[in-house]
Image 1 (tube, rainbow, N blue to C red):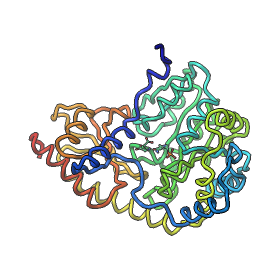
Image 2 (cartoon, protein in one colour; image 1 turned 120 degrees about the horizontal axis):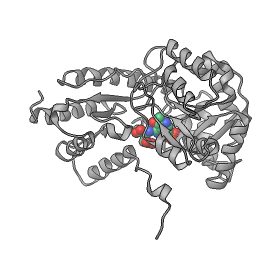
Image 3 (tube, rainbow, N blue to C red; image 1 turned 135 degrees about the vertical axis):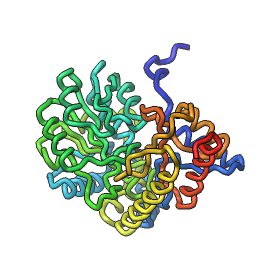
Length: 389
Ligand code: PMP
Ligand code: GLU
C-alpha cells in the first residue's frame, strides 16, 4: 500500500501519547504520578453540566450551523470585544471541536504549498505538524527565546515568511509577554504583511495579577490579518467537551468554515450549549478558584524543583507547565530520561524534544499538591541515584 507521504511523515503527539501510556500503566495497577497532561484536574463547572442536561432534555441534539449556534457566536464575539476593547461581530466567530481544531482549520485556510510559518521555540507539539499537514513549512525564531521577538519578525518577513503563530501564555514555557515586548512585537508585525494566529487558549491562566498583554492592545489595525484562538478547555476545565473558537477576519473565517463544513460539520451541539453558559459568565466563581489553585501549585512546584541541584527554569507566569532544564551530566536525552522516569519511578513527564528543545522536561502542575510533591520526589530520587544530589 502506498499511503500519503505527507501524513506518514507526521510525528505522533508526545503529549497525548505519554498521557495515554501513563493512564494505561495506572489501569494495569502500577503507581503512576502523571505530571504529563495539559488539562485541569477539576470537574467541569455545574453550570456547564446543567446546561448540557437541559440541551439534551430540550432536544437540542441535531446538527447546528457549521460555525456554531448563533447564541454562542454572539457570546464569544461580545466576550472577546470586552476583553480586547475592539468590536467583533458574530460573523467573525467560528466555533470548532476544540482550539486544536480551530488552529487546523485556520492553517488549512491560509497556507499555500511551501509557505513558511514562524513558530515559537519551544513550541506546542502540534504547531509544526499542523503547518506541515496544511502543506507549509515551519521555521523557528533565530533568537531562540520562548517568545517571538520584534527582531525575529523582521528577520522572518525579510526572508519571505508568510505568517506567525503566537502563544502567550505559552505552552510549554509558561512565559507571558511584558507590555513592552508585546508593543514592540505588534509594531514589528504592523510593518509586515504577515498573517498572525494568536493562540490565546491560556489567556485566563495568568499569575501576574494582570491580563496578558496582547498585540491587538497596541495595534488594533492588525485585526485585518490576525486571528484570536481560544476555548473553554483550560479556563473552565472542559477539555473533553471539545469546544474552541477562532475570531478571525470575515474572509478567513469563511474559508475556515468551508474546511469545517467538509470535514467535521458543527461541533457537538450539547457542548455548545454548555459552553454558552460558561462564556456568558455562569462559572466565574469556579474560574477564579481554579486560577487561585493553579497559582499556589505554581509556587509549590517551583519551590520544590529549586531544591534539586542543576534544575533551571523560567518561573512560569501563566499556563500550567514548568519547562525545566536538567543537568547534562546525567548523559540522557530528554526522551531517554522520560522513558526511564516512567519505567523506574512511575513518573510521567514530557520530554523537551517534543517541543523542539533538548535537555528539558515539561512538568504539568495541573495536578494535586500530593501528586506534585510525589512527582518531584520521584524525579529527585531518580537523579540522586545517578549521583545528582
Ligand atoms: N493550544 C495550546 C497551546 C494547547 O496547549 C492546547 C492544548 N490542549 C490547545 C491549543 C488545544 O486546546 P483544545 O483542548 O481546546 O483543543
Ligand atoms: N495541550 C495539552 C498539552 O500540551 C493537551 C494535549 C494536547 O492536546 O497536546 O499537554
